[in-house]
Image (cartoon, rainbow, N blue to C red):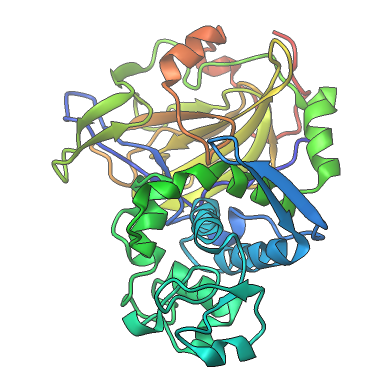
Length: 396
């Protein structure tokens, strides 16, 4: 069975200039709104070591102690509202950059810091611990900052954070979800070397994948023939929709800010069936302050050499119309919801977003992606039942 991958806890939506029959939304990967427990899987048994490479090819080898600190960060983030997978990756990137996931004492600035459990020593100003936080700027006391759980909570910040926005944790940064992960880490750390964080993103991803998923489940996802689909269906019935805005930069009509509109908008009458793009597993189905009602589905598609993981996202769905729940199997062409105008929307439409590699990966332009997969166009009467009880469709 295809496993349900973690989804970023919230989605950021950008809007374009309104036109007739058009409701525009941006969908950019964020984690601020989805329940954290829905986006980050539980931490499993820690491996004795993990090896990964930075974007520059440098090999990073982590031992069980370092992975234990990573587990603390993941667990703290997964139980902090608004963090989600995206935010946990930002925190892992920051800790990898600042301390290589080690609890560092600082005997030069605080000799008593060595009295607390630590993995080594550092001497950067008066910095301490995993995130190299400084008591002098208000992150906490020496005793607090030598506690990995406290450091993780302080990094995430927000309403439940220990510092109440001063210094700012990740959740205290306005629109942090719209930043790259490296830039988001820098926004919290305020380093003199802001460009060093991004190189650790592949390492952070490797940690997340290894610590929060079962190897057996991963193998099943890639190798089980019943989980791989080759059939793609256009997500709206034929003859009903109008393409109103595509992927690319545009002016947000509410904020006036120019930013990426990371999907395609299709205007259609309210109540129009929304169809699952291909076979998959529902990863998130619920509310979002910008998207209104949001549905995210994980898919595994047949590829030229190996199966390919992709996530599809459908936003502004009509209230009460989502017919599936997290973990449900869906088939290509099954009705999963109805077109609506919920959230930040100017009229009934579907905003479709495609993420090759999973929802925490960068979005791609849905139109060329759809064209390359030759989607089947269905009329409304051909839509399949909403649940995963129908025969699994793998041909096409």
